[in-house]
Image (cartoon, rainbow, N blue to C red; front, side):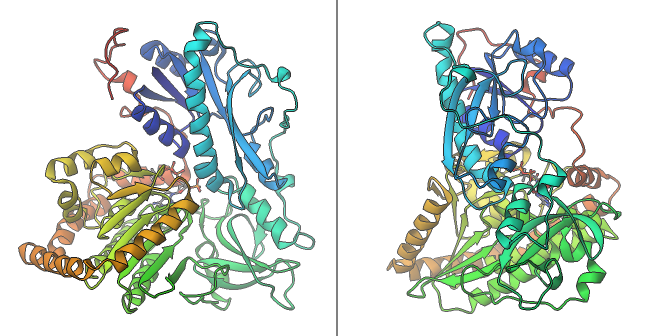
Length: 581
Ligand code: COA
C-alpha cells in the first residue's frame, strides 16, 4: 500500500512505524502537520491508499478525512479520548493501558475503532512508556488495521463505532493542567511525587520551584529517607541531580527547565542552579552498589566474576563532558577487574545519543563546549578501543543516535534489541561531520561504499536491518527484560568459550596492525579537523540546527528525505507496478 504518515513531527513512534512498514513492503512518505493546505497538497501528490496519523496535536482537516481513509493512532485504551491519555494513565495508577487505532471523524479520537492493543503498565516516565510499550502496541494495532483494509473496501468488514463497544473502560478526559500535576511537598509521599513527575516527563514537566526559583521538574528517582529533613528541602547533589526530601523519603531531581533564565530548556539540575547546588554536599554513589540506589553509572559482575556489566543511564542518552569523563573513568575501573567480557549496557531507553546538545547550547561558548564534549566522547571511544585484554560488547537496550551509534561500534560485538531504532548519521544536526572514530570503525565493519551510504542516509534504521547490513552483529529479544536475560546468557557463553583467549589475542594483534597502518590519533585528528570547521568555521549550520533542536522550534516544512512525494520526478506508480522496498 501507499501510506502517508501525517504527523506533528518525526518522533520515535513515527520513526519506528516508518521503518517497520517499509520493511513490510509498503511505500511510505511523510508529511508534517503544518497547515491544512500543506496536508491536502501531500495527499493530492502521493494519492495514498491510507493516511496514518501516529502523532498529531490537532484534528485532521475535514477536507482529507471525508475523501480518504485516515487512521489515527491514539495512545489510550478503547473509549479513551483527550490529549493527556498517558499522563492520566500514569497519575491514576492504571495497571493496564493500550493503543487504539480509530478512523478520523469530526470529533477527535471518537471515530470507529479499527484495532487496539494493550500492555501492562510499568513504573516509568511517560516518554519511556511511549518509546517502548506504546510504540510496540501501536505497531501491532496499525498492522492489524492495515490488514483489514481489503475487507473494509470489499464491504466484508466494518470498524466498530465507539458507542457499540460494550464495557469500554476508556472515557473522555481533559488536558491535564498545571493544578493536576502540582506537587504538595507537605503531603505528597515519594510514590506520588514520582508519579506526578513521571506523568509529565519528557513534556511538559511539573511546574514547581527550586532554591526559590520557578522551574519545571523532570527525571525523578526515588531515594531513601533523610532523617530530620524538611519536605521539599534540597539536601545534596549527585551526577547533576539535586536530592530533595519528601514526607516519607526523598527524590533525586535530575533535570529542570527554568523559565527565568537565559536558557529556558531542560538542563541538569546542578547546571541550571549552579551557584545554589555548589553549596550542597556531594553524595557520590559507589559504581558497584546494591540495586535500587539511583546514580547514572552502575557496574556489576556475573556470579562467577567472568562478565562485567557497565550501565550508563544518561537522561535522553545525552552525554555532556563531565558524563563522558565519568564514563571513561568507569571503563578504566571495569578494565582493572579480572573479567573476560565487558558488556556496555548504556541506558534503558537510549543507549546513547552523543554529545549533550542542551548543555552545549547553555555554555558561554557553545563552540568551545562542543569541542570539549566531542573530545570527551572520543576519549570514551578510545578507552574501549584500547581495551585489548578482554572482549567488549555493546548491548543496545534502547535507541541510539548520531555519535551514540558510533560509540557502540567501538565495542568488539554490537548486540541490539529487536525493535530499537538507530540513527547512524550526523547530517541531520547541521551537516555535522562527526567523530567518535567513525572513519575507522564504520568502514572496517561494512566496507567503504556502505559506510559512505550510511553516512549520507538520514533515515532511521531498524536494528534488524542494521544486522543485515553488518552494522550490528546480532539482534534479538522481544522486550527489554528478555533482551537483558539473553545478553547475560550470551555474555556468559562468550566468557566460557574455550576459543575466547585466542579471540582476544587476535583482537589485540589486529589492533596493533591497524595502529601500525594508521594510528587512531590520525583518524581522530582528521575527524576533529572537520568538526573544528563545524564548530568554529564560516558555516553556522550546526549552531543553527542545534539551537532549533534544543528549543524545539516548530517545524515549518517537511524535510525532503521524508516527504518522498515532493521529490522531483516522483510519480504515482501504475497500479500493477512493483512496490519499491
Ligand atoms: N543532546 C541533548 N538532548 C538530546 C540529544 C542530545 N544529543 N538527543 C536527544 N535528546 C533529547 C531530545 O531533545 C528529546 O528531549 P525531550 O525529553 O525534551 O523530549 C529527547 O532526547 C528525546 O529525543 P527525540 O528527538 O524526541 O527522540 P527521537 O527518538 O524522536 O529521535 C534522535 C532520536 C537521536 C534521532 C534525535 O533525538 C536526535 O537527532 N538527537 C540528536 C543527535 C545528535 O545530533 N547528537 C549530536 C551529534 S553526536
